[in-house]
Image (cartoon, rainbow, N blue to C red; front, side, top):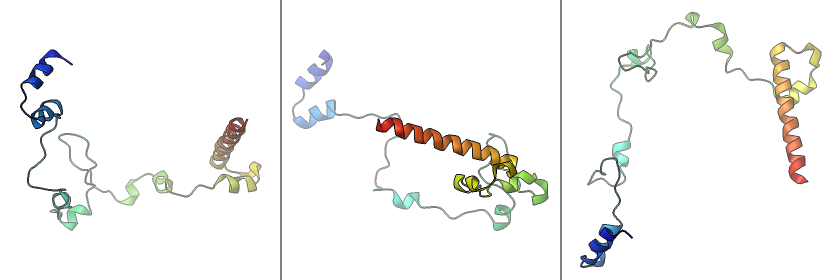
Length: 131
């Protein structure tokens, strides 16, 4: 122990003072608010101050610039066609294996190769782990 700490402990009159000197925790963040236990009431969502009209025309929270504004929602015709297909369900490997590979579209063929390679790697890894 450093000498200064030992000297400060010698002058301590009680165990509480020793624990206060040795077990003191300090943090960079501010101290906890006094008077509130748990903070459940203060963490509750506050009522929105925005009108429904503004909510339906603006994407809130999408602004990343300091001096910028939240972007406006555009009509569907203003967005590219590929955007509407991002959430379409893609066929699993078992379904792709049942189909004829020669007739698959390019995207499905690419997905088949990727999933088949992944399945083969997993199988080889499990065989190596057993040996």
